[in-house]
Length: 255
Image (tube, rainbow, N blue to C red):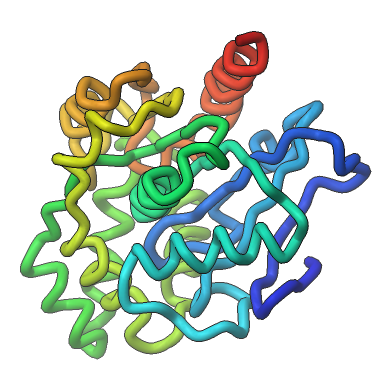
């Protein structure tokens, strides 16, 4: 993966600078590995998926607030010579995308929010287990259990478990603390950016009705549930999710 400004990122090869940009922002404890190739290889798009500061292979230090991540990513895109982009985020990444759009709506060509909500209600017991990870990694086990639909393949759960356990000490806890302070409810009606909100129909981490409620508050948003998927819908149903995203991107380009 290339590196710029302390961030490692995956980028679609063979892109042209004239192509529109799709930025993929992973969620809590995630990395570029959170995104399946179906989304990282969308035809006609320059797709860029960074490891957030403090995550994956990025050397830049972690940040305390989601707003700080939003500011960092806009500056990072500017350093890459990218003025505008469609912002796609999963869970915590969806919240970061919303904050980025709020800060620079004219630079935001669209929003794709997977498992997003106007605010996150973080389970206190989960926070306790993440704060004390020596308790048999109970927190990670709970996250994995709540992140997938019942019928999802065991290999996906195993890979996600490894990804979460690979985080630096305290990073998962810090991510969930940052999420607990996020509240976009009042700002949503004023954000006039085209948006697609997707949630897994069996999401136990961010209930689908919360994503739908956010879509109803965003003036230019559309909501769709993905059957047979949980919170990690892009990994559980990559073909279906990529098709939904491609359809939205085509519609926005034709406007």
